[in-house]
Length: 166
Image (cartoon, rainbow, N blue to C red; front, side, top):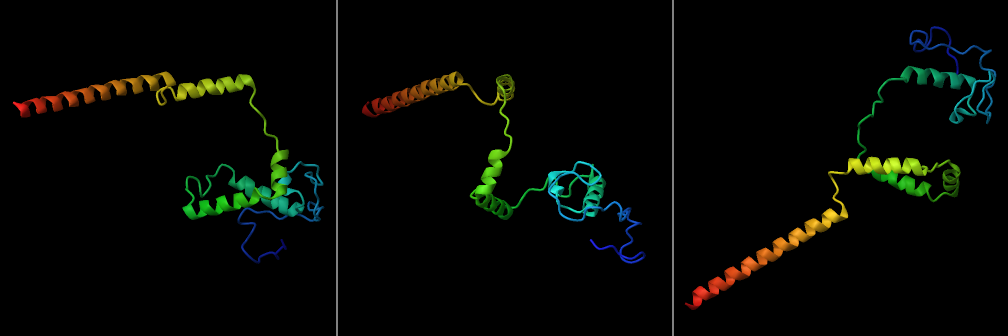
């Protein structure tokens, strides 16, 4: 980003922004490491950026920390969802994306944690989802009710027939 002359532009000092001195921006060429000239570790996504750009992004990041994002709670429109779906399908066809996903750490839960998750979900769904025994009991009860209803209907029909004959 080119530096502006003092007094020109938007008034960066008034907005709380500070300029990088020439001594602090020692590395303006793209590098692939995540450490700066000062030895500070940086996120991998900032690798290859100039010191000035890194400082600018850090300041923005610090300023936005704790603030609620403008789009929090907003739902995507159906058109946007369709675009996301299409681009995801397209990306999953590229071998470099698949390789990247394969190389990512995907830790598995150990047996103890799986049991804890299972117990927690059983408690959560306790009143919502009947067990197979409960489903069978409900089905049997409905079958008995249907049989009783059919029997009552047949008896009523027979009674009507008997009245018609008399």
